[in-house]
Structure formats: C-alpha cells, structure tokens
Image 1 (cartoon, helix red, strand yellow):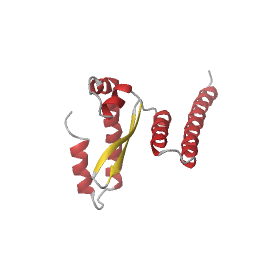
Image 2: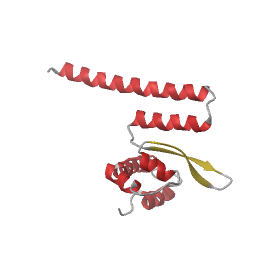
Image 3: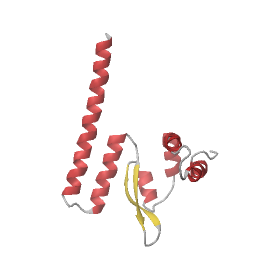
Image 4: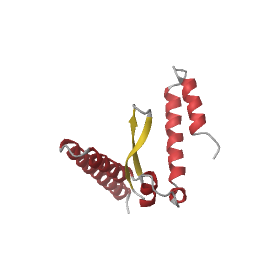
Length: 142
C-alpha cells in the first residue's frame, strides 16, 4: 500500500462521514420545515445528533422559565436510560450508562472544552467565574 492509497482511504472515510452528517442535517431541516409536532421534531434532532456525532444516547432538555428548571424533552438511545429519564424505574440505568464509558467520554469532552474556554478567556472578563465553574463541574474528584 502506498502513501497515496492511505491518504485516499482516509479522504474517502472523511468524505463518507461528511456526507452522512450532511444527510442527517438535511433530515432535521426537512423536519423543521414540515411543521412537525415539537415532540417528533425533538426526537428527530436527538436521533440525528446521535448518528452524526456517534453518541449512543442523546438527551435533549428544554428550559422552562416559568419554573426555572429543565425538563427532558427527547431521548434517543438506550431504552433503560430513556425509561428512567421519562420517570420510569431507575433499575440498572445508571449502571448501564457507566458501563458504556459514556460518563468518562463526557468528562473528557468537558475537560477539552474547559481547556479551550480557559485559553480563550486568558486574562479576560469572567475568567474567575469560569475557573470556579470548571473546578466545580469538571475538575472535581471522581
């Protein structure tokens, strides 16, 4: 195998991933434009995010200003997690999520994001607040 074929295979994989992401994005756009019911639309968005980003389970929360809280609006993925988030039994849901490594992956994504955010706010307004939030949420002990 030559270097050209390695790059070609890599390029082909990247092009396929891009095409898949664009297809999912178009599907979401069609759903938005169709005037679909909000519950169906949010379900489509959760599934699309799962497919495009490779997440096993995606949860969409909506902010309700009248109660100043978040409510689960859509869940795509593991049925036990979906049922638990919908108010059903929690039996095994948290154990199943932990066993997938999703919590560690999410923590790493948060750490990466926090690092980028810290770098972009170097010496800027609100850096102290970001540091405190990062410490409380991301850098805490496991």
